[in-house]
Length: 394
Image (cartoon, rainbow, N blue to C red; front, side):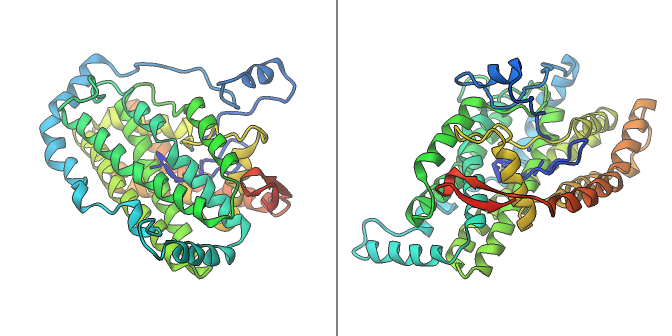
């Protein structure tokens, strides 16, 4: 992922959500609401190691104990149906496959070629690529999040349950994404690596607030959404790199997108199985996550300067078409169709209400998206520290 992920990133996963005011977000994230500047609460959030945005009241361990047993009973199923979406290490691409070879006599020439190609790419693209990379680099947070889920967490750090094996191996595969993008950006010479490194440290220290309540129903709905958002985001950065004439960068982003697609398939299959076993509980969880909105993994992104960095990054992603409000609603619609939510029968009264809510959500969000696009046309330009404070239009 980024569990990359309202629109950012990937990213991990860059990842869009619409607030009640239809503000746009990019993926590897619905945003925690901002606090008014100058308020006591805002001052508290500026203390060291505190997120730059408000963290909502957090619910924990919302899954009833009897439903935890469902995940224990699915151990064998997960081994046969989920672990198969992992690739053996020896068959995986590695970052070095796409980068200049430091052991080669031609290393300096290869770096110069990379830098020449990078010169043709505009600043706004680099803002998005940096944001996606930072989202991917916050991977420790995403593994931590998965290990909060009751019934599927890795209880020992080396547990042999299928769920624990998946979490560790998924993390290992995702780790290559940030490594590759980080090294590419370092070699490109187009970005301020120290500011980027500070942003990564801030983000990992701030954590994330996905509103999943230690509940694997909510957690796997979240990751299904986020992996698809990250797949879309990296796919679009690949497309734009190709348009700007950098085929090798397009290959980098395209290979990352391919991984995200494979991971998306696994998470979607988990929720599909939950709909089969417990349709009422699963549709209630789906509606719950949609009401809370899907927050992006990098919602707490901060560079030490810009308190609204995530909003600014998301706006650029929206304008470039990397990850948009339309993508957010398309994902909702895709999941409703893939999980056959409209076809569910035998639901409780609350389950039917949740079904109606989820199925009716896409057209309502599309109306908000149209209004937001009109407002976005008036957006200003702002400086980004990642590109040496050069200004980029939002």
